[in-house]
Image (cartoon, rainbow, N blue to C red):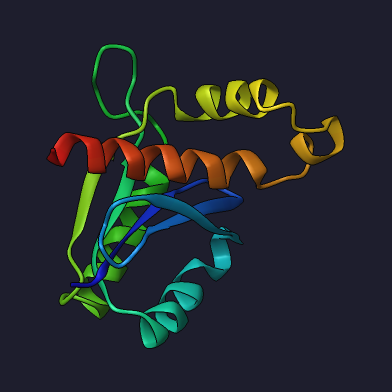
Length: 137
């Protein structure tokens, strides 16, 4: 059984999280510059077996796709052509960034760590993946 990888796609950075091999827990993997995401994923897939990518799907409060999908869709189209063997599933990511910031505060994370670019992105990817895992149960 391969891992499941989640991506919180942003215009500048993408948070990436991954399950353990038994698909029990979600763990932050890395925050990657968006321009380097494709290369990062190809290298990771060269080392690990990934059966599915869960991509955060930004939606409005009304449940419609948000404007951000216009940045995500080109990546998805390229990925599906290059790696049709690794399916991509979309998962509603509403509030993940807000929850990530709250979690950082609640955990007592120092202000300097909270201000590091990418910390919230990695946590948001974990939240996306955790939500996906919980939905399967």
